[in-house]
Length: 534
Image (cartoon, rainbow, N blue to C red; front, side):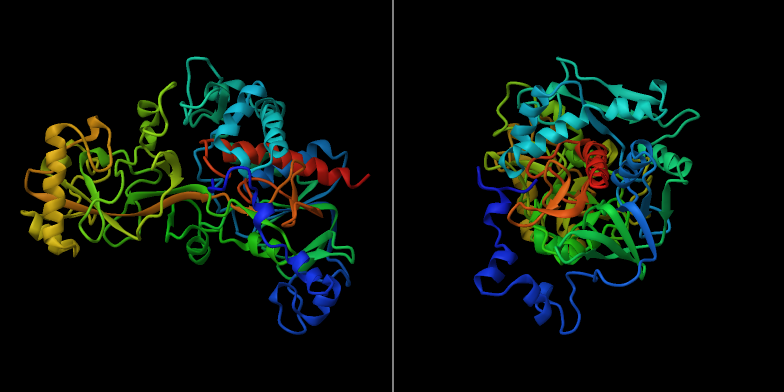
């Protein structure tokens, strides 16, 4: 979901380390000998764990990460590999990335041309057309694949494309061609696609060697640069067909978040996605793309101690009951981040350049759709009428002040002192807002008219809000075969990826798309890795 200049791909604008070394008259082999590859210290090459030495195990395919992508790849090896062996590595005692916590919507299609057109408007030039086409053509099989593995239709909510239905970007043509499948959360069956796939891994334990608490530490390459194995938890495992990286994003590495997105963000889901796979692939010369993309960011409500979210998922359904200000006491963005209500404001035939509302952290900004830079914190301001209307939902707290969710004051000046913002600015901001409400139009940021709620009835309240995200999508460049590529677009032999790790979603993200590509590229990568065995 990164912004790129139209028609220019990341692979074209990134400096190639290989080209640099050649231009300096240094071969990669001699560079490694000099200890400069990957900025390695003398005597320790960090771009390769070393092909020499004995192996602690040998497998046809090795997969790093037991999220939906990794499980899909492992099950594909078990079901289609004609006895091929598989090692599935998980860094934690149990999977703790996004997969077990996500809603589980998996995108699927029933045709190719409509989805290709729709996705071209969303993803555009930042991902090659052949990679987008591979995604679409394989995503067409997501539903039949799950059913073929033993799932029953009655276990699923299947949202088939209908002409009258629209998706997140209804303004773009063919949005109605996108469908979804979702495991129902009631009944005697798996309640989530991750749970369903984990059960299949257990059923195929004779083929899939599943090791938990075994983090991948390095990739092993041969003299030609092909990936032939991994180092994991201090042991060396050979991969005869290939290694598939399914290690997710870097949303729990604050340095990477700030380096690539410019924002100190707070992720909703698991804590294990810390960019390990990114650093491992970077050391062997992988090219990177989409690094500031993802389901990022919006200001979401936290407790005053800044230790937990008000909601376990989106907490933007209450923002129509007040306004958001920065530490300077001023409004600074279109502060009704209503992703859950996008269908209300995004209708077919309307002008996307004037529509509002967040769509997985992306919003209209200056006539284009963009990820906004957001401050480290803000304050959600509302009055007694706003509280009574649900600014802090009663099912979350009957008394948000006593429960540590909000502060309360009898005047705006007192409230400003409690949250340490300039009192004169806060009073001016609230007065201007109330003027907008009275005239029925937000002349500053064009919030929808039906979200214009006055802040005028004491007592007044403030809740902390911080930049929240679901996941990042950036990582190693991936081609249509699921192969990881160098900055020049050349495939690194024996290395593959799937899921959010180097996702295809490089500009606008459509909900369900990441789980969709976990399925599509999990299978694509596994099949191409197994093809190298013949």
